[in-house]
Amino acid sequence: MTGLENVQEQILVTRSSMPPFEEYCEEIRPLWESHWLTNRGAKHKQLEKELSSYLGVKNLTLFVNGHQALESVFAALELCKDGRDEVITTPFTFASTTHAIVRAGLKPVFCDIKSDDLTLDPAKIEELITDRTCAIVPVHVYGNLCDVEAIRKIAGRHHLKVVYDAAHAFGVECDGVGAAAFGDASMFSFHATKVFNTIEGGGISYADSALEERLIQWSNFGIEGPESVKYAGGNSKMNEFAAAMGICNLRHVDEEIAKRKLVAERYWKQLEKIPGLKMPKPSANIKYNYAYMPVLIEPTEFGTSRDDVFAALSEEGINARKYFYPLTSDFKCYEGMFAPGQEVTPIAYDAANKVLTLPMYADLSLEDVDRICNIIRRVHDGR
Ligand code: T4K
Image 1 (cartoon, rainbow, N blue to C red):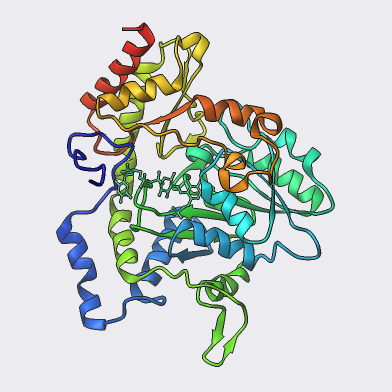
Image 2: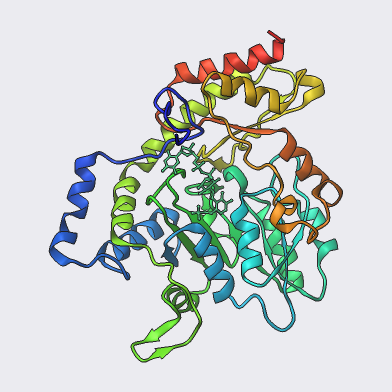
C-alpha cells in the first residue's frame, strides 16, 4: 500500500502542469541524435536564455533543483567568512530555506514576519543584526513579495548581502519589476509542484555578472578546467530532459497563470464572507502568479480550528496542506538549537497554527472549488 491508491478520486493540494505529450517528444527528439544528455547542453543553454528574458534579468544560472541552487549561491557569495556566520531569516517557510543556511555552515537567526502578507518584517530585522551578521535571507512566501525596498536599505546600512528565497515567486512583478531583480541574488524553484516546472529544477538570478563563473563551477564539482579544481563543489546541474520540459512549459505558463487566477478569484469570492477566515491577497501594483491558496483560520471567530477544517476536507478526499507548519525553527532536527518559535517569532508561530493551503492548480475546476468552499462553510456553520 502506498497510500496513493485512491489518488484519482482525491483532489490534491496541487497538480503538475505538463505540456502536450507530442510537444515534449518533439522537444527531446534531438537528444537521440546528439547523445548529449547533461552538463550544460543545448537545451540547458536555450532554457537559461529564454528564462532570463521571461524573468527580465541579465544573469540567470540553472540548477538541478531550488535547494541546491540556494546552497550553491551561499557558497559562491562566500557568505560564511571572516567569522561572520549569522543569517537573518524567516522560520515561516519550507524546510529548504533553513536547511540550506545550516548546511552552508551558517547560523539562522529567526526574525518575525508581518501578519498581513507573512513575509519578513523589516521593522524587526535591525535589532537582530550583530557584528557576526553576514546576510539576510527573506522568503517571498506564496509569491507575496517581501518589502524589498526596506530590506535593501537595511542591508545597505549594514553591508549585508541579501539572497531572496523566491521559490514561490516565478513571474511575480511589483510595479512592472520582476521578483528576480531584487537583492544580490534570488532563488527560484522549478519543482513539479510549482507554477513553472522543469520536473525538478531551480535557478539563481543575480546582480553581479562575476558570480556566473563561480555558480557554474560550484554546480560542477568546483571544476574550473580539465586539470584544475578550484572549489569543493557538488553536482547540481540540470539535465537536458528537465530543460526540455522547461522549454515546453514556458510556452504555456502565461495561460497557466491566467487559469490559476480564475481559481483564486472563485475561492476569494466564495470564502470572503466567512467570519474568522483570512486570505492574504496581492495589492493592485502586483502582477501575481497565484502559486498557492493560503487561508488563515482564526478559531475564536471561525468557531473551530484549522485542524478541524483540514480533517473535514480530508474526509471528503480533499488534500489541503499545512504549508508551513511547524515553523522550521521548531523542527525536531533543530531541537535544542533554537529558542521556541512561540517565544521568538510569535506572529510566525500564530500563522503556522492557523494556515491551510487549499488545492490550487490551473486545471482545478470551479465546481471543485465550490465543493471545497461548501465544506469549509459547513464546518464554520457547525453542520
Ligand atoms: N524554498 C521554498 C520556500 C520552497 O517552498 C521550496 C520547495 C524550496 C525552497 C526548495 O525548492 P526545490 O528544491 O523543491 O526546487 C513540495 C515540493 O517538493 C517543494 O518543492 C516545495 N517547496 C514544497 C512547498 O512542496 P511536499 O513534500 O509537500 O511535496 P509532495 O510530494 O507532498 O507534493 C505535494 C502535492 O503536489 C502532491 O500531493 C501532488 C502534487 N504533485 C507532487 C509531485 C511530486 C504533483 O502533481 N506532481 C508531482 O510530481 O514538498
